View 1 (cartoon, rainbow, N blue to C red):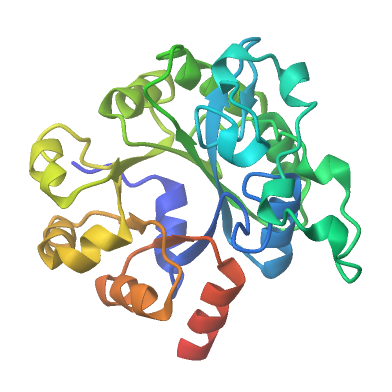
View 2 (view 1 turned 90 degrees about the horizontal axis):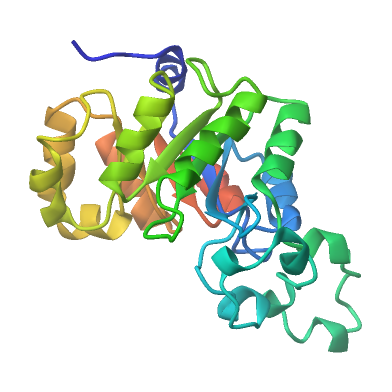
Length: 275
């Protein structure tokens, strides 16, 4: 019998899909920075998405890539650096490298562009003046293996968010990672991310009946049979990364329950006009 936790019933009760800010409002601000998440909340995002990696001294930080070339202009690896070392880096300037030469550019708060720990993000959500959900993706492969999920569940537990009714859900492209989360926190919602449509027939027999499925929008658009199969099986669907009106239409036609987007304000505007 398929388990239907309270958090999922609540999501399905709403008329429109949940708008999840992908790495924050990452179209407007540098991804995974405090500024990006504050912007997403100001824009009205229903939920925040983040990727987490483990530092050498055991902290979970919100960083997508294993190395820091793209977002912090250094060849260092997140897994080999301590939090104090990461805290010295600038994770925001890459988004607008000419800002210092633009007299009309607003003054930037250096602290808003520092590396963001998962704990700090959770604290912000816990203190916010309205209900906000979290979608946390663990990145694999990693030298720390299952320690990432163990640390994640521990941190969520510090907030009482490792059980049924939690505002947080855990996502991964790794089947082992999702299974690990379910062993550590059996009542926590999990999302099996699907990178390629042809992976689903292989995953289908081994994923839990109550797991949420997270396909990419490109696969849903290019392989419409994937969406039809998920619907037929009664799966809850969360789609990444939805940034255009046409992509949103694909999601609305399927009745998905969450869209993960770099542009939360735009998605909310489109959904408002569709009411």
